[in-house]
Length: 259
Image (cartoon, rainbow, N blue to C red; front, side, top):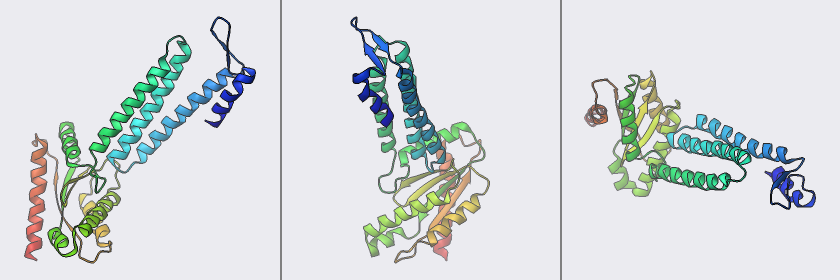
């Protein structure tokens, strides 16, 4: 960016990039191709960095946001190249405006899908994701439904502010526990969370979740009950999958009350 701006500032003095002749036509200078290459390199590096960050992202929102920005950078590079070929048509100006508008709308849609307290996916995004999972018919998937134990008692005895802090801490524990990039985490509502796990060690995931939560420091006991169900082909709707996992969750809750 610095080199590009420096070249533009120097151009009126010596025309190293371009000149406009008496007929209003563009005349390339000795450094014009270098200037084009620098701008294309900027967009190319930006698209690559966005791709790298999307691969490293720990949740769906970050991954999608980086993908949107990467596509934007790639489109800008293509539009810039087309502008060099068709110089009489304002391709770059129109392409830039439309690209920024599309990025803005896409990122706004991403924000609509995020739970404001925990920064996880919200219920609307969860239903959409479960629908996509059922449509893919991938048998190597588990749906986990989690519920915070005695959460009403926490709110009643320690206040809703402490309850909110507990939910945020649990959300962070879920992020730390889900080490697979394909894992999907959402807040279903209240003190309930949902995870879509694509792996072979669902018991190990449950154990990691309990371990991380037990390491939290709060003036009250904090833990979760977990129910899970593996996806089966006979589950035609995502509700069938959710109901099975939810039933196991409440079986676990009954055992906890019995103890």
